[in-house]
Length: 586
Image (tube, rainbow, N blue to C red; front, side, top):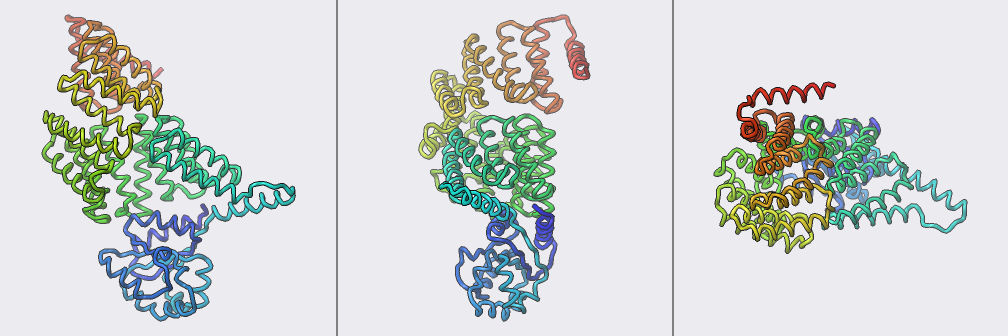
């Protein structure tokens, strides 16, 4: 996007976050107005769209709307050109300019260039009262019209009967809607095919470096992420980001969104430092462009908190979750599903810290809000039941946990269907509980159901499939079926090494469990090899004080003494770590 639009966003940010009350005007085509409304509607801005409130301009309508939201300070009136239907409406606007100013709020009117001409010619008194006038260009529309005109001219000159560019674009948009429907049903393969087809059509019409294609690439990257194709997802996000940075600028809210999306993929790849850097960059842009009270900013706080949670940085996690929760309670209210989700996340932190009573209270609060907003038959309710069940399971309250797991699974099967990843996860969670209770046959049946669904949806080389192999292997291990367990552990390890690499926490967990298996079989030297691999990864990524690192240290020390009772374990470990450092330097 041009410098003019970057300046426009900065000006809007100043109005929203810094300016005192006044009347402001933003000139943008309808498509651009929709983008602006989407960006700012979740922040400290109230939106009144004349597409939804048809009719001529009447001061009383805006007055009632503003008075009904006494806490809000900034109001954005979108598609105001639709309210300028006659000369009378323009005269009313002139007459009420002082009354609009008297509302004591920041009023931002969004109009098209034609609407701006109407105001300048017919509502001069109002127009002269505007504190700041901002112009936004809709570059997509300009580029698309140029492309359409060129292609249509070429078609006319060749005198060929063919589908017009506008018809092709309509077909591409229809494919995108079909893709969205497929993705909502977790049919990622169909969603991918439809997105790729739509992208091909749009690419032929608009060219390779078009902003609209960059956004489409972001959607396709999301599908790759869901399929566990993280390298492809990261590459496509990076490609999309390059174009968005070029067109919109590195400080644009849309660039911040892609920084966040790319950070999510990096986090899943175990690239924590890179993920943290991108989350922080996204957070800085959102705080500056949208304000610290914006819901997009709250989302970044939440995502960065989740990254820190996985690293055991609990103090930082709590601060960020509470900042996010404060914004959501202020902007969306107590009875909103996003607020409920924040309570859920904070409960998860307390659970990790062993603060079970505080966790149960927040899980319960989250569930009550979810049920009041969504009803009892919704996938989000199933998640809430599941989280509370996990908490009960950790406390040994198996009967309470079983009831909640079953309620969660019933909702998922009913609403999402049998062939859905969340249903597979429901089978898995109940299987884990049965395994802890020693109900191995029931657990095995559910693990196999979960595995079948994951293989069907994602294929046999996906992290979900690896998780199923790993869990089934653990079940066999607990039953003393070491050969069957070893085959599945190795199968799981091969997948995670391929997808995550050797320096990822999931890979380290696989190393640890395989080491435990070898230890049980008396293969101490082999067990030490895998304990050491796990220890190196956890100490590198999570630090020496993380529980996973400490657990590996203890397990490795015990195995070393079984293997070499007279040897000095600490000296042996120092030598092993020194060899690793020297190899890395080379």
